[in-house]
Image (tube, helix red, strand yellow):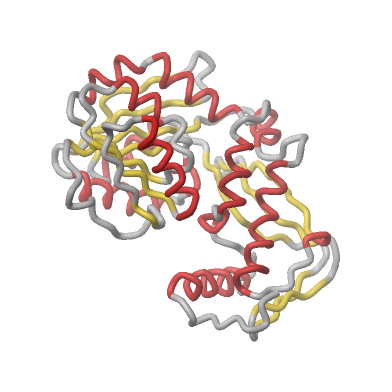
Length: 317
């Protein structure tokens, strides 16, 4: 614990502090999911994507691999690929290998060290590819680098859009429409509705990696904000909310306890939870109507045989 923590010492830390205190002050305590992704959290998430129970990554990857030529033809030449929440850029390589005369790559990610390491790796693998990383929250405001060239194409894989509520989806897609321009296109990964018997294990795996990922958020708050969460008194919990069509991740307090962050103290009763993330599962009809309201028209949908996942190609309208 950092006894000398000053919540106004830096802009980023102050924003983190404010988000945590505001979230824990709600009747249903919450923590913002974008703060999962420090270097440890980013690495844990990459481990999650390889788990047997976690179908989204391998299903989406297979869709991209099997349809790479069709996707490349639809996108055309001289693409400037703009990836939101880039992570390790694993799926990106499928597009980089298939696109015709790709003009550049703009990865956007909140985890600076992880992003810059990934960018360096891509420069080594693709020495002719201009890589222009942007450190920041993909929900924030930013412009394309002045030196970037090509026809902008947004790329938002992993069904990360499922972490956003309807208002956030509208705001994000309208901002992407403004950034990418009137000729912009967008490749969007979408997780489709399916049985809870499939969904729950995907977010509460038998090896406990997802639990470690969720609990790491408390470790980060302790380290960066000087809090005193006792991780032994919280457990990871995944719940399917059928009415909202979403998996919810929570951290459940196992005992009555209190946690101090700066000058603030938060009381927990045994069984009380902190809601850390939603992962929504979509039906395409309602989602495409929502995307249309935000300025995007569905051009094509590629899906796997089980209809677990879809990759959508959108064009600005």
